[in-house]
Image (cartoon, helix red, strand yellow):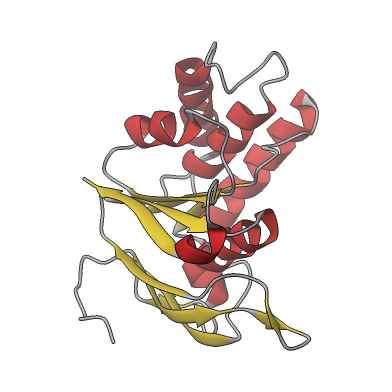
Length: 199
């Protein structure tokens, strides 16, 4: 078992996700503190997506435990999810109007002033404008803005495009951040490996 520490934002202990008798991701354990980041390498896209959603508290592990802040994702899912900004691999593909509605909804969920949420989202979108991973549609930038605007403690990026993880961690250097990736070579040897863990 990993040692307990008050400043740990994400703690995953021997997490596995099993469906129909098959592991859908490589099992792993990790801890992230504020300002730390990690890239979790999985053997395939399915494993990377499940691992990202598991660390964000969206799905619960079949075995093991995921704690976000002081909240067990199995027992206190709503509280755990409020600490996490999850960026899906496609970003936010809705229209501008839908984006505005989603900002309002998330402001209510996170109990954040709507005007402050809109300002934070505009700041994030401005910072990401023109980034190589944000083509003309800016779907990924809108996904990042929705994830980070509420002032979360942990950002989880599901299969981010090249350069996105670095840009997101630069926007909010004080929060913990995790990105999932697919092993490019020898996936059997790299299952569940933490590739990067730097301040």
